[in-house]
Image (tube, rainbow, N blue to C red; front, side, top):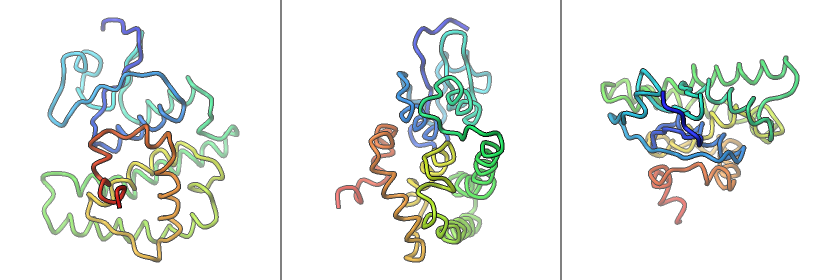
Length: 211
């Protein structure tokens, strides 16, 4: 693979896994070129860096990383300030377990809703499960400023991109989820979160932002 002097991130502008990488890059103020790669696209440079041709993919000098979680772990170690994982191994493991649960409990439902080959009955059921599960966890956000933490972490960087997409997923949270809704509004206005958004992602909530 040819050497790349400046860090670049191949990213799908509507994909929540790409969004979480862009959010961490913004939180850590990493200088990076974001290269948009739409669904079905695969520029030659991406194929050279990633044999699977998928996104997100992070490339730089003698560096080619793919899989969102691998990239997040690399960024946390390579750019330790601000820290997005706890310092102590036990607490760090708890954060990683929360990320695992976000993937198993919620991301799989989001991916099901968005998949073209999902039949409508399964899509409706996935929306129902996601809405009920998020509502059920909402009280946590009345106790913590972030997801089981007093400080923003990689856990939030995995969760917030998913929550940003609720309107386009066809999900409206009920009043019972007020603590979660408050958490969303606080973090969606963070300058770093705003900086992480692609133009397509801004359009996902354009009506709400303008109201």
